[in-house]
Amino acid sequence: MKNGYEKIQPLKHKNILLCVSGSVAAYKAVEILSGLKKLGANVAVVLSEEAKRFISTLSFEAISHTQVLHKDTESWVDFGKSLDFWGSSFCADLPADFRADSIKIPCVDSIANSHTDSPSDSSDSKSSFADFAPSYPHPKSHIAYAKWAHIVLLAPATANTIAKLAYGIADNLIVQTLLATNSKHTQILLAPAMNTQMFLSPQVQSALDRLQDYGYEIIPPKEALLACDEYGVGALAEVEEIIFRTLRASYMRDLPLRAKKPNKNSKQYDFSQSDFKRNNFGQSRFWQSGFWAGREVIITGGGAISPIDTVRAISNHSSGKQAIALAKAAYTVGAKVTLISSKIDSFLPSQIECIDTQSNDDYKEAIESKLRDFGDFGGFYDSAKSKSIKNKTPSERKKPVLFMAAALCDYALQSPKTYKIKKSTSPNLTLELQSCEDVLASIDSEKIYKVGFKAESVENITQKNEKNTLENTLEYALKNAKKMLRSVNEGGKGCSCVCLNAISKSSTPFGAEDNSFYLLDSRALCDNQGDACEHIAFLPPQSKLELSHQILDFVQSSLQGLDSAKTPLSAKSNTAKNK
Ligand SMILES: Cc1cc2nc3c(=O)[nH]c(=O)nc-3n(C[C@H](O)[C@H](O)[C@H](O)COP(=O)(O)O)c2cc1C
Image (cartoon, rainbow, N blue to C red; front, side, top):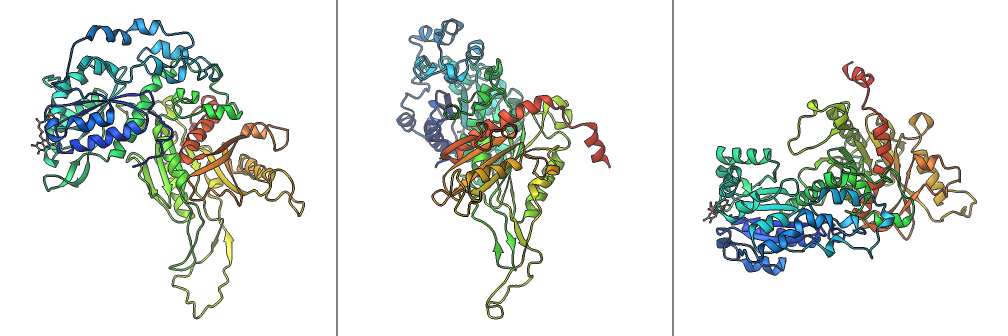
């Protein structure tokens, strides 16, 4: 199982405590452990005595490379010594050149102060938290384990442990450990697994509600044929779902720590390539502000399909992979994501809303219907106990962002045949195609920030071609991309940012795992140095997921200034809506 994050290692230096209780789904915890390790996490495991009846400690130890904590292995020897590590004295003693991007400790002030360093101040030769943080908890006591964990994942969570946890009945090691965590430092997630009636029982439901009120995140079970031979809700959520939820929770957990003192340069994007290298997942300074957290993000992907007759159609080679990668990336950094695509053939977390589309009209209707749902203000912060949008003050709401990565039809038949055209009666077929409405231009940029995607053939980087025209040159492609940034009245598309794909014979992004982009925003328009200006960012070839995180950084750097400058939509649009 691969989700694309294995290469990025977003959970590096993250301490995750996996607690396993006595469900028949306990064997899946081994797969969860393996998935988390592949994303770079340090994982330690606690097993309930009942869980040991379902699965051996050896499986967990072989993968986590550390001894499993359970009743027989708990030890209080050396207890006092290592706890100092987590105390305030340790935080006060941090070295001055402590590397900001890898700090993962509960000393909020130290973290915030270290983020005031500009990225260029940090270098690999300096001290990193990895040099100080223990990869595994020590000693083997539930208190040490609780303090060590940034994230606790209880999966599977039994009815018994859920109920005890809700009421603080600390008669087993898992409940003792979870109660000993500090909620400011540690996010707890639980993934229940049990028989349908057990799960739906008022006792379990009210215990889950209670835990949610305490700030625990519940990963709902799925419907499936259960071990008890009944079909219904209660099966442990998909392992990939659990991994994505943990990844997102880990990012969200860090937000308050990172946002305490934003980097003084955080509104400026450095267009030099070295900065892109530094903008790796989990290290980007733009992530500090929570710009994406709770924001509604619509991503379109795939290729539109325009019918010729009842069986034939015109489409393009878009695979939808870039949009899927963008959806995963935006979800991971906390956005509320809707993916509108003709091609969704990969696992996506269930919290991403997926809308299947075919024609240009389908895409347009899906986008407009979402905009109607958002009302005048779009997305909003998504706290653990999220209030309804109606209770949000305008300042809590965020203008949504549209990533128009789909390749819509530029041309279509005006009246497709309502029957199958016979080859015998039409040996040669001539189709007259008409140009389609520009869906991106038609979306009101007052209601949503628009990020346009453009693919242009580029055979020749800057020189004119044989016919001495600019067509198929990078210069020409950039000129067209810049045009998209202009308002619709000026012949543009009203985009805030544009991602340009320069397609050549040797590199075509369709269906590929890797891609590369030129990124532009209004800063490129102000540039009078022609098209080879320095305010166009180039993202070299890399995986579509890595690119997606860099695109999010770039878009954030463009929009956060606009966000703070603009008040949410005015009474004008309220009036328009009420008409
Ligand atoms: C074969 C078998 C399967 C079980 N599966 C589950 C389950 O999926 N979910 C659950 O809540 N309890 C299940 N139980 C019941 C728990 O194992 C029991 O409540 C136990 O006390 C839980 O202990 P723990 O929460 O400390 O791990 C199962 C019991 C047996 C014998």
